[in-house]
Image 1 (tube, rainbow, N blue to C red):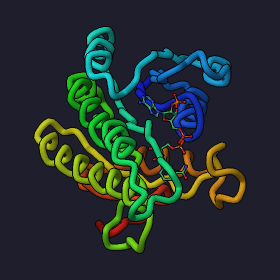
Image 2 (tube, rainbow, N blue to C red):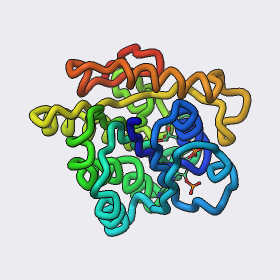
Image 3 (tube, helix red, strand yellow):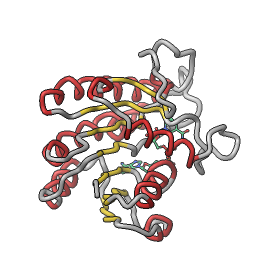
Image 4 (cartoon, rainbow, N blue to C red):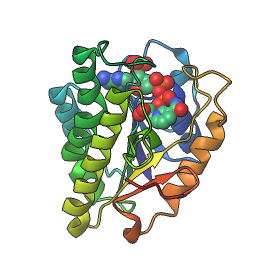
Length: 226
Ligand SMILES: NC(=O)c1ccc[n+]([C@@H]2O[C@H](COP(=O)([O-])OP(=O)(O)OC[C@H]3O[C@@H](n4cnc5c(N)ncnc54)[C@H](OP(=O)(O)O)[C@@H]3O)[C@@H](O)[C@H]2O)c1
C-alpha cells in the first residue's frame, strides 16, 4: 500500500487525514509534536507509525528522515500550522509570535521537503502537499490577520519554488486550502465539516496530474488567484 507522511496530527485536519488514509489501508507516518497529549491519534486503527517531532527542530526532522531512509513516501502532507491571534491590528503586532509562525508555516514545509525529497522521489505517488489558506491570496485580501496571511502567502511561494525545482525529478507540489473547517479551534460555526474537507482534499490529491504541480487549489479542486 502507498505511504503518506502527515505533520501536525494531534488534532484537527491532520488527525482527520490520519483517520481517512488509515481507513483506506495506507501506511501512515503520523508526525505529532506531542503524540502523548491526546489519545485520539493512538486510538485510530490501522497501519500507523506515530513519530514525535516539532517541525521547527531541523535536527529532529533530519534524524527522522534518516530513521525512515528505507521507506518511500508517496504523499508528504505539510499540515502543521499556527493560526495565531484572531486580531492583529497596527500598534498591536506581536513580532516574536510572527517569527515563530513563519518557522512553522513557511520554513518547516521547506525543511520537510528538503529532508524527505529522496523518500518522495523513490515512491510511485511523488507528491508534496502544503496545507495553505485562501487568506494567503494577495488578490483576494481585504484586511486583518497580516501575520497569518503573510505566512500562507510565503508558503505558497515556497510551494511554487519547490514545484519548479522538483519537476525534473517528477515530483508534484500543490498548495491546498481546506475551507473554513469545523475543527476544535473554529467550532461548529465554521461551515465545512472536517471529514468533508479532508475527503475533498484527498480527492484532489488522488486526481493530481503533473500539470497541476505549482497550483493553489481548494478542497474542491477550484483554483485561487495568487
Ligand atoms: N481549520 C481551518 O479552517 C483552516 C483553514 C485554512 C487553513 N488551515 C490550515 O490547515 C492546517 C491545519 O489546521 P487545523 O485547523 O487542523 O489546526 P489546529 O487544529 O490548530 O492543529 C494544528 C496542528 O499543527 C500542530 N503544530 C503546530 N505547531 C507545530 C510544531 N511546531 N511542530 C509540530 N506540529 C505543530 C499542532 O500540534 P500541537 O497539538 O502540538 O499544538 C496541531 O496538531 C494549518 O496549516 C492551518 O493553517 C486551516
